[in-house]
Image (cartoon, rainbow, N blue to C red; front, side):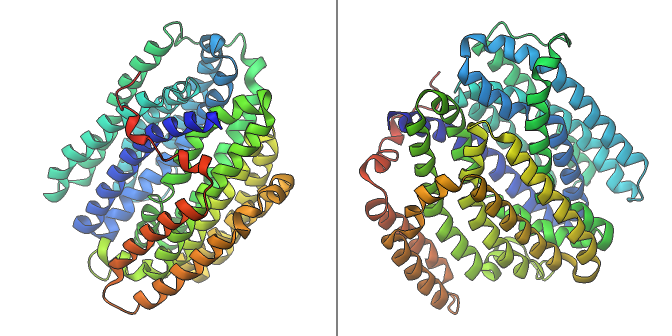
Length: 479
């Protein structure tokens, strides 16, 4: 389990990187919702959602591919980078053209079109930065990504705080939001060159045929993997308008925070698993089982707290009655949190075992199902219908991942059938149920903390507990 110590180190930096980004965005989006109302909030989040989708197209799996391939051959990392970069720019150009087409050929209001145009540049800066982050992850230099994330995200929040509170025009807010990503691009370029001075930012397509198949598989997975989770926002805007988008996105922004945890762990363990699948298959399986157990332990209390205290969470974060419809949506999404916490490990094992194509097929089918059901049900059932469709789609993906990894599922079933886990889950569920009828719901935090302490001593084994033992020894500024 020595590799677990490397994962632990990576986890700290990955947590900081993702936390800085999501915390900053959640606070910013919360302030916009409170100070500007659901209509303008809906416009801003719609433009940002379009940008996020086109970032997925522009990323096209390059960051994950770099994080997977570089650890296998670090001595050849410059050649790997140089072979991928021209294709990266090609897909970035396609994404840029796609967003311009969206602006030119839709019936959105002029305000929304202006915001989408501004977020086009946000998308360009972000996708190239993600490419460089993938290269740094491949070298397991996640501390550099954390530094860049801290500077640009807290810098953005500090600058925009004044403007948002004073209700500056949302266009100005968007310009500042996009501009800070250019700074992040410059910083990430500096760190990538520091790690590997021989990388080149040149357009040389001579080797594209050697890597195109890999790129298409990873890219298709990334596109459809994000579409089935985000396309509903676009369809809601088409059928129900910007106000409905604001209600739906109010919940979406909340659940992004707990989803930090699986993203952190996956970013941390991806290069380690890729290495071990070839060199030490037993270690590969053991690390996957450990990750799965960690995510179950963290996912259960988050799911229960979100379900039982959905009303209190919405009222705490958003003022007024504009977001009352977000409460039942949050309860539905609480199940999605649990499903994604449990299923992500099985998807990751497919990726690191060379079965990314299978994973891509699953999310492709999920996207098709999601789009068809949303087109049929959103006009009739609105945002509630979209939430149930999202839940159904995530269940489909989870079951499909498990079927593709059935041997691992059978081997890891003890993670779910652990008697202490079942007792702990039932106990906090009972406590949460009674607390939901009292004004002291905030005491649920202490119950969650108690569950995690209980899990540490009664569910994790000694080697797994070692993962949490010396975080304080990791220096944020280490090289």
